[in-house]
Length: 327
Image 1 (cartoon, rainbow, N blue to C red):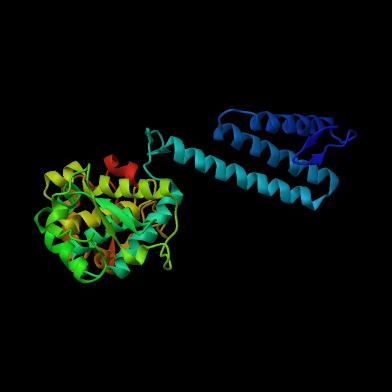
Image 2 (cartoon, rainbow, N blue to C red):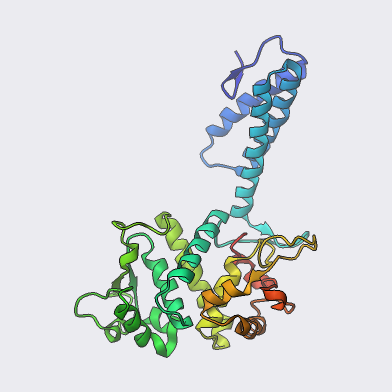
């Protein structure tokens, strides 16, 4: 008795080619489940075959539930191919090389949730404080506590780290261990990091976001890679410029354009609202253009970036595409 997707394939089903295809398809799905490792490309093709076969089966029998099953299989094929693209890399262009992404699309969604939380709830308005809040939030996102070293703090904030840490502690946003001063934290070595606490992220309180430890580590690593970008360091980019790099990468499509798809059908991104970008970066909207120009000079954004019409428009440079937030 042949079966596929928990359905029995009738022995007298016509046309005969459909009966054979459904029988072989059931065997193929069972063989796939016995694979030691998944192969999403193979699975997507199986879903495609199922969508075609069940659509024909629905036409032959008039069974509406078979049509629904065909539609679900077609959707599963699209989703599976998208997952495979994220794992294997998304084409940079029609004939371009595959781009190995640091984040999946789902992780990009979590990242933007964190960035909006920082934008709306940072206790310090200036860029230095916002950068520290972002990086420490990503360290403490799950447990409410996270480890930082002097090298971390100095890399993020250069000579302003002690003042910013003290300001965050004075505001009650950050709690240092007993008998540990901001100056002590600046001398903490990797083998003995300082464990800081962010009370608003402690699990016993309402949580602003939810994700697993793998995602937390991936998001923190992503932010560290952006903030520590070699060309940004070479240009001595300040906290506001680094935050703009974070914002542009997080809010870009796989092709690097900023924002969602433009309504004019040009293929370019719709852009990012200057007011929102400025708020996240601790800037005035009229100052965003200056920092965008610094990102162009550092090879982070392409040359045609602009801030006309209250929007930041542009595209990530090819070297930055692995860091796209995959809008």
